[in-house]
Amino acid sequence: MPRWKPLPEELDPEIRDFAEQMRRLVDRSGLSLSSLADKTGYSKTSWERYLGGRLLPPQGAISALAEVTDTDVRHLATLWELAERAWSRAEMRHDMTMEAIRIAQAREALEAAEAKAAGSKAAAAGRKRQKSATARPAPPEPPPPGPVPFGGARPEAPDGFPAREPGPAAPRPAASASGPPPAPWAGQPATAATRPVPREANRPSGGRRAAMLLVGGLCALGVVAGGFFFLGLPGGGDEAAAEPTPPPGPTAPALPEGVKCTGADCSGEDPELMGCGGQYAATTSDAMIGTAYVEVRYSEVCEAAWARIGAARPGDTLTITTDGGDEAAEDLGDSTEGYTMMVAAGDPESVQICVERAGDVQGCTLR
Image 1 (cartoon, rainbow, N blue to C red):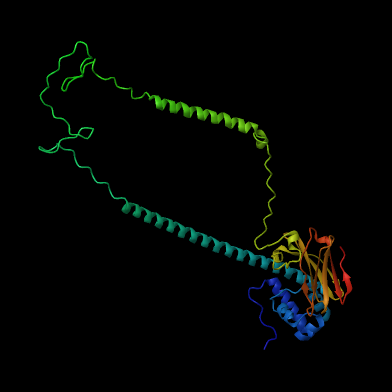
Image 2: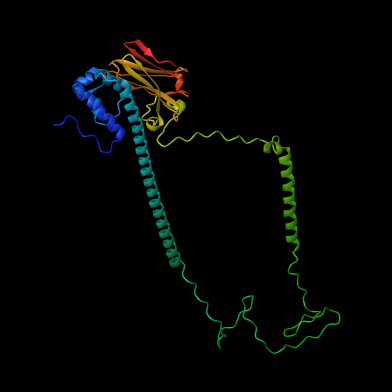
């Protein structure tokens, strides 16, 4: 039975070459994974992941492997740098693929929602048209006009009484020499002297004319009073119009998808949970403190830094501080590797990393 499982088929060639080189060094040394973990300070599970191509080891693990296998660390470090670049490219491709999948899913959901809304709108319009057609019946046609049948009711006069049928003319009374002229009798046509003078249709009566004059006077009085009111109030008129409009406030910068903080908001937060790691982070400096390998991780997008350590001893405490006094510490406990929370830093050169053990400072990096 072979000692090593086959490496994944989709593994990048440079990562595959680096993993195979580490396997050859372990086979040549004759060390088991348990012995390798005891000598390097990295757990057996970590070495299984490193040698299986599932996780890229930190530089501290590579330095420890070169030491226990009596290998030139420079050659192994060169292979590690090539593998790290390939690993970063693979992570970026994975992130871009996942982003494209999320965008496609969002577009499909939006199109489905638009189609559903359009269908609902068309159905509602159809129901409305059907309801309008059934709720408004056609008006009945008026009966056609026709002659009044013989023997029917008489037509009524405007005052409600039956119209008077024409009859024989009554005898005209004689005019009096001293009295006023008699009124026209029935059947006599009106003359110019006896016809009543009609009132002009468009001329208003005396009461209506007085009401119109009163309304016009009240309107004019209201306009004058309003002008005095607005001109006499303090702080009104031009003073109120001269008040400056406050300028709009600055808008917050847009963050990439998945990034949840920037600057001071990132202090004390986990870089992986806040989206500041991966493609948005880089190692700006590294150093060896005793047997431990430490490095400064910095995210330009989040404007924050954190410390990472490998090949440490159980019980070590990793601390990162800034020039402004912001600090984050991580107690490794039984582990030999880990990282701190973030500190806000506009410049990666303004941070310092220290390693402590049982309250004693083992060493710090230079700013």
